[in-house]
Image (tube, rainbow, N blue to C red; front, side, top):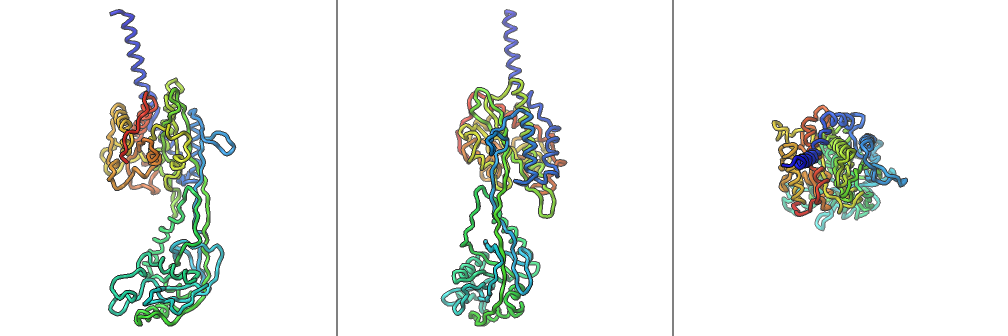
Length: 530
């Protein structure tokens, strides 16, 4: 064969080989050492658990922004002054309890210690009220505690539950079956009845005592936090909301200028007679229950690596930068795995792609590295981005989302070379195929699809930031290694991260991204398995 021809063939093969090895070459910059270097900062005590909108979360955003800038990535969000910024700012809104107390007989009672509140009560300034006992607070044609009682402009104290006769039958319906005046939501019926008759505040005397009452108050305090959960839109609470203040017999007696024993005798008398009480104990009470509005300022971090001939198409690689902050007892939840592991993975992938671009091997499509916040509060950062995208979602080819890849779950205690993949086949069969091929060629980890099953009770597909892209029709892969014993606990620290295990997963994301960003045809949305 002609020598020049052989030389040309050799050069062509060599060039092709180099091209095929480009991805592997730049993936080598992703190392356990670099992952640990970054995570030691991101998951340090000084960031105080990176609670959404906190100073620690903002320090984390500043840290990753610094490296994105160092890697040559571009800021693409718009700051208030019109300049470009790595920070896509947004607000969360919440309404929470301010100062709440009940005063009676010269003593002030403590909210969520001495009593709890069902519903929403808004009393911004201390208000005094005359109080009257209204039996069980029932109003039925055959049994009414309000028949001869005027409660207009007064507060009422009413007993929990409903009266029964000596045979154990309820007086309201004459059977052994409870009516709407008993049960977990009966307070709503009783409060609405009292308020419709003109009552100002409603106090319900709980039947629980001692440790049972203390436990109930603690549980109610936790449940009440849902009324303080942040939202993406300002919270509007109606003035027509109903509420009831649950108190012990001891506190109710103080409110009514009597003793607990006399108050409970009155209750027993109603049960024995089968009729509403003819006595109406009275007293005075002062109430304050502030509802406070709060705006939480936070931000996603968005760093852009511009592509070449297909730069208008954008691949998003995401992870959440926030965690749950400091526990009530003062312990810091560093969130090394959740999602410090994803946060530092983005830094390593960004560095690898930036090195490739610096050497003329940059991606054809653009890549947006997106560190979102508010994930722990309700996927808010990714929801905000999906509603306010920096690049049109119709031009977004996929989202590769990394959330918790630094530990091993119980199911793989003896087999750490694995990763759960969720969502890869939901919208694009080609995305799933590319992911499988990248793993087979470069990483050779076990790809576990257990949580991809729509019947899986954990429903992880809906529980991380990729979902806000998927619901907009953008193909996704969620990389995850499962829940461990330190999930959302102070024990989720850097010392427990398996960086040697994590690095190959990060490389898998990189290789999948490399193919998505450089292939000739954009992957198609050809399935709908959600």
